[in-house]
Length: 385
Image (cartoon, rainbow, N blue to C red; front, side, top):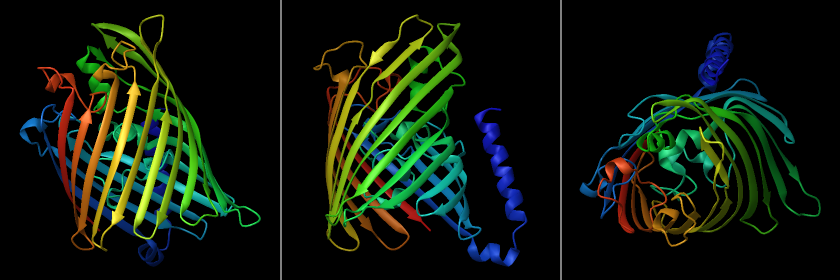
């Protein structure tokens, strides 16, 4: 049974469960939320994310609707439908971001199963909630918006819990997970391969990982680490008109810290991600990468927040090991301001200065080649309820 079939089956089980619930209790407990946003991308040189951003592009629209239901004190259900358009990516194709049942036995142990979010780093499992962070674009080397669904969730389970440490040493929360990931053929990785002459086709494979975070005795300080391993296969990929077997293996090791005090919030993340890839050839191509960022935000007022981050990505995806090749690195500085107009509407305005072009660019909409340095203005207006 493939991933989509399992997800549909799980959704059917949830529907039957809900149908059997008491109607009055159901409507009292059910929580429904949604969001919609419209963005604008305007860049000085290179076109970003398959958009025509060098001439200003509004092809950046997103919307989602989610529902959650605490069936009992220990068991809850949830689901989210999402649709977006980013240049030529996705084109408003609806998808089921997540759908799960969650049973919490006690504070030490719980299990969530279905299509569930993957705990990875500081932002991965909340990147679909645009309202909770000020950034129009999170650091793209770790949270690429053109590969959103691949990073956000998998079909399987997450086990979780929390332990209070003795002697006022804080608390440790843990999550471990396993299952299967599937590659969206209308998102970034598949589209890049397609522009290079390889049609990925159906692709996916097993994944497993864990996340451990310590809420330290120092008020406001959290540190943590994540681990992820994925083996993806594309058994019927097409390369130069011939059917080939594609295999991609990679491991992610992520280390992070967060400090919050008063109006100040500081975040940092360091990511090691070696990968191995082959399509029809006997040998793997090895692509190591080292990624890190530091960011800070300051809440000026209850409605106005400003922030800055610097992100560095050094990888070897340009068929060379030249650290000075702009195809092998991306160094990004972002300045941001967010204004919450009221409880439902918000606006984000962000400027990016990027040296190198390892992230976010596609050959097909940059036919004249890529400039070494690019500037990007990203703005986003959103609505949530």
